Amino acid sequence: MDSDTVSSSVDHSRTAMPETLAFNSPMKKQINGCSSICVRQDDPGRFLRVLYESLITGGLAGVVVEAALYPIDTIKTRVQAARDGGKIIWKGLYSGLGGNLVGVLPASALFFGVYEPTKQKLLKVLPENFSAVAHLAAGALGGAVSSIVRVPTEVVKQRMQTGQFASARDAVRLIIAKEGFGGMYAGYGSFLLRDLPFDALQFCVYEQLRIGYKLAARRDLNDPENAMLGAFAGAVTGVLTTPLDVIKTRLMVQGAGTQYKGVADCVKTIIREEGPSALWKGMGPRVLWIGIGGSIFFGVLEKTKQILSERSQKSHNS
Image 1 (tube, helix red, strand yellow):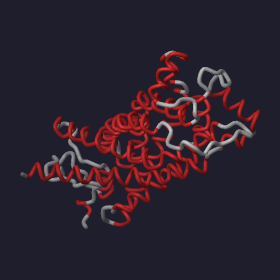
Image 2 (cartoon, rainbow, N blue to C red):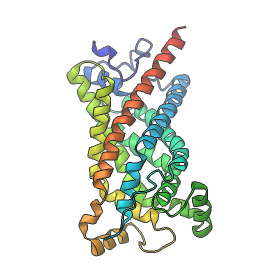
Image 3 (tube, rainbow, N blue to C red):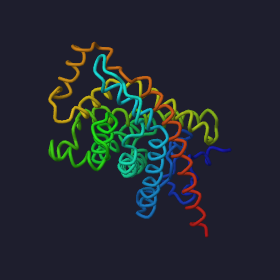
């Protein structure tokens, strides 16, 4: 397969792209190909299609991963929340799944609704050797915007995973009653501290691996290869951000209590009372969850992009 056809979806805008915007060098062809959907930013119709397809692919991929791997996430949360010597409960590993899916769908859709168009724009305006910057920036921005939905979803999920509430509806009602609406955003700062670098690194590693793989293979990636790269990107990023995840979990599940007064106090208290190793609690299930989740997530993501792009191409030609 020649380099002009290398794309994670069907590159149906190549022939229509003005010469001044065409990516002529091999590297730029690969960078453009790693973008899921080629788009001319001066065409509102194409931009809206990218946005629409990104919302669908992101939402679907996020829901599939959460539903498939939720018990591992519950174990990770309980391990991280347990203080030194605390007992881990192995029952109710699906506690909070329903309410979590209700939040994950719009949160994941919102993330990709921001990530994909931002990435496309930055790849066009930045020099070709700055593609990693485009992926980092787009990932961080997507994480920041989607946090509006992701944080309340995470608060409710983790409180239910640790047995504080029996249903998502009760969790929302009682959290607001006891802590005010701000209780729904408990640990917001620590969430951003974990998720902004996590989102930026995971998507940057994944996209850069795809670029390098395509350059070496001189062809598009198949489904198992997308899944493999997604698993690697997720596992590596999961290891690096585990301490930030522990801090986030402790702050989110403490409720109206004042055990930790903030991120700095949380770190100091954990180290003083439990030792530095406590900051790496739950790393095993976290890496397993994100590694497997990365393979499923990016596999579903790329396949859905391909299907939507092919349907769009057929509709455009008909």
